[in-house]
Image (cartoon, rainbow, N blue to C red; front, side, top):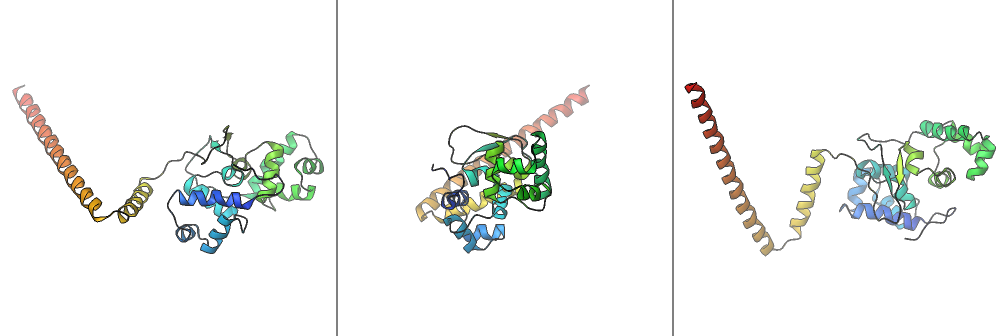
Length: 239
C-alpha cells in the first residue's frame, strides 16, 4: 500500500480506507450518512479524497465499528489494549494534558518542543491548554516525533502497533446482542433479495426440515425431563 508523504497527506488513499469500512459493512453512502449525521455528498467527497475526511466522521466509525484513527488516517494497524465499551469523544483538554506531560518529561521548552515536532510554540501552547484540537496533519507530526499512535494522542488509548501491512484494523469490543440481531437481520434480507425463485424454494425446504428437527428435539427433551421428574418423585416417596 502506498504510504502518504509525511508533510503532504494523500486524501485519496485516506478516503479509500473510509470507503472500505463502509463497503465491507454493506452500507450505501446514503445509509452511512444518516447513521453518522453527515450529508451523503460529504461522504462521497471524503471517500473520493476531494475533501479531507472529517475527524467527526472518523470518530463515528471508531465508535460504531471499532476502526482505529491510525488505520483510517495512516494505514497503520494498532491493537488497543485497554479496549472497552465506552463511547469516546475528542476532548481537547485531555489531549493537551497528554502532550504537556510528554514535554515535561523531556524537560523541553515550548519552543524546543515545537521545533522537535515541526509546529510553532504558539500551536503547542494552544494544544496544551485545550484551546485547540490538533488537526490530523498536526497529530501525525506529533505521532512521528513522539512515536505515539493517533489513538493515544486523541483518546489516551494504550496501543500496540502491529508489524507488517494489514487491510483492516481490529480493536476488540463487545457488541450488544440487540445490535448483532439487527445487523444479522439486515444481512439476511439483503442476501434473500438477491436469490432467485429456485434458491428461495430450496431455502424454504431446508428451513422447514430444520424446524422439524428442532421441534423433535424439544419434544424428546421435554419427555426426558418429565420422566426424570417422575422418577425422582417416586424415589422420594419410597424413602
